[in-house]
Length: 95
Picture 1 (cartoon, rainbow, N blue to C red):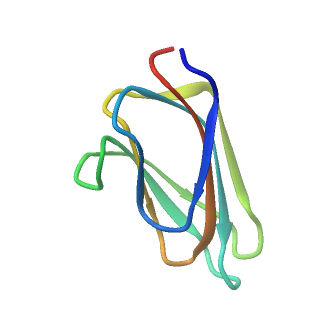
Picture 2: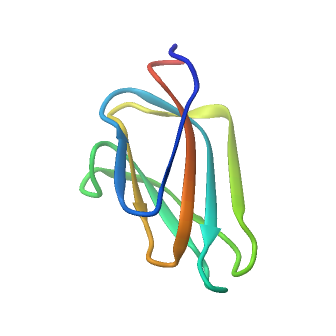
């Protein structure tokens, strides 16, 4: 298993194109609206949808996966328009 990686984005993005372990995701909403991100197992929103994460209107949502969430085909995150920022912490490789 590789080391822990982290990255931020405010737009839809492929974070990994190979086996990935998702450790944590942090969703920060925009202007009092619900911030929503959708996690996919793959390289695009055409792949298998795994989970939808929604923040509160005034609160950042932190989701920690213990054990990490295994994604066999990669990690793509569709970031909704009412998200100011999305932080993703992950590992490349198998558990």
